[in-house]
Structures are given as structure tokens and as C-alpha cells.
Length: 386
Image 1 (cartoon, rainbow, N blue to C red):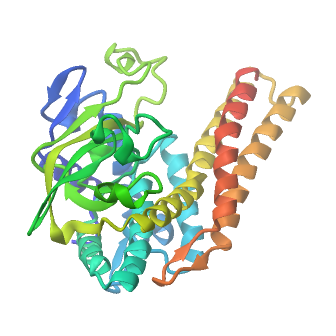
Image 2 (cartoon, rainbow, N blue to C red):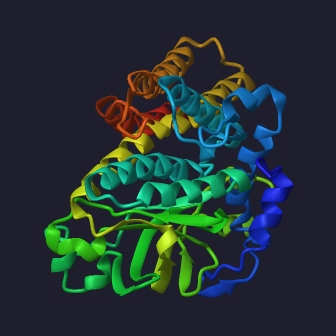
């Protein structure tokens, strides 16, 4: 199987026996949970669009490993054109869901780990990239959703991981075995974690030589023993349970995040892609951050929905041609396309890495992120006075 249907995706998630907690209670079936289902629907849309001929140029690409057709969310970028199609895909999905569709973090993690593992191998003669290629091939063949896990609890930001009063504030190796390692800690704010098949763990900051136990990158399934997920709360998350047809926001689609706890989780050697090479942590983090900041192109798709809603409100109220309304709509479009221009520019200016895959222009990707931290709020502010 190379491409799942939306229904096959739902069935595959339902088979995974995750340890999930919400409102202090264990969730046995996240697929049917009314709070979690909208976020699952957003991921499902990535599978549904890939089945539609009119969207396959963006949602489907060719695996450089096998030559087979795969979902773009499992691909390694082979050119600037690939990077551009990635952001076009993200804008499309933002338009279709008006929410986070949760597969971008894994895709960005794939490309960061692929290139960093190669450069570690070049220096130390390790076989991390070959291990990762096997995992990537599995993800491509099964069309998996993989959560990218980078953010640690962190504690005192002025101290390195090994200097923390509590050594588990950053995820670390606590035991090394002949066949693998045991890790302990947590990854915070994990977008889409309960809608994923696997989790790809990466370091979160630059590391010193004494932080060797924290320089760990690996992937494990979500039903791995001793792995637990505590779903994060949102301000209006119970409103969907009140039975109202109005004032529930985007009731069909949504996002979720969770605190993912690794309570002495065993990771086999074949799933380890960095293990103690502290000097490469910065490379992995910076590359992931760059990819992911250009991925905020998704917010322009959400912006398209917001602009359309504002225009519709003006039409309902009989004022679509009022000059002050038109000025506000024009400014919303200007802000949205400014975000888009930096995402596209960072992609076209991409460069080839030693591993052969392409990375975006890091400076322009950071410009995209800076725009995204400001412009959606300014757009929403203009909509509120239409």
C-alpha cells in the first residue's frame, strides 16, 4: 500500500492502542471522541485530497528511494520545485480545513533528519542514514502520519540540559543496552500526536559535549509501552459538546496538541538516528526550524477563508462596495499575500545539501515566520470591524 484513503487512515488509527488522557480520564477510542474528532478530520483531509485527480500534482510525488508514487507528506525534497509544491499543498489544505492539518511537522522532521544523519555518518562512519531510510521507506509504503517531536519542558532556560536540577526536563537516554537505549522525559506541545502512527523525536537546542545523553534522535510507534499522551486543553474545547449548531467555531475541522511522556521507553538500535553526537544537534534543530517556518504557508490558506468570510459578511449586510469595507478587505489580502510571498521565495531560493535533498532559504523562512506571528491577528482585527 502506498496511498491510503481517508477511511483506511481512520481504521489504521483506530487499531493503535495509545495511552491517551483527556480531562483526567483515559480515552479508549480517540477516533470517536467529540473533542478530538475535528483534529482527526483535518488529517483525514490530507488523505482524501490525495485521492482526487485535480489535487494529485500537489499531494502526490515520486519517492526518490523507490520511484513509486507517495504522499508528499512522506517525501524528501529533491528540488526547489518540490519545496514550492510543498507550500502550495499547505495553502490548499489551509483553504480546505481552515485549521492545522498536522502532518507538516513530521514531513519537516523527515527532511532535517535525512540530511543531518548523512553528515553524521560522513564524520563518524555510522549508519544512521541507512537506518533512517528504512524507516522512511516504511512511512512511505504505509502512508503514515508521523508526529515530529522537538520541544522539551526545558526548565531553567539559562542552563544546559545536563545542568538542570531535574535531569528529566529534557528527554534523555537513561540506559544503554546492546540492542538499543531506554529514554525518559517528555515532549511538549505535540501537534497532532493522537492522530499519528509514529513519533519522530529530535533534540530541541544546541548541546554541549557534557549533554551527550540528550543528543538522541529516534522514532517509535504510538503504541510503544510506557509512552503516554496528555491532551492539551483549549479555551472553548467543551463547547462542541453543548449540542448547539452556532457559536462553535470551526466545528468540522481543528487541531490538537499534547504532552507526550516517555516513561522509560525502549528504542531499538534500528530506530536510532543520532546517539550522542552533540555537535550535530544545532544542525538538526536549525534545519527543522527552517523547514517548518516556511511551512507556515498553511496560514495563508486559513487567511483565504478569513478573507472570504469577511467579504461574505459585508455582502450579507449590503455593504460590499462601501469604501472603508473595501479598504479593509484589500489590506487583509495584502497581509495574506505578504506571508505567502516569503514562503514561496524561501522555497525558490532553496539549495542542495550534501545528502542531496534541498533546504529552503533559512533567512526568508524566518521572515515568513515573523510575518505569521503578526499578520493573521491583524487580519482578524480588520474582519472584526467589517
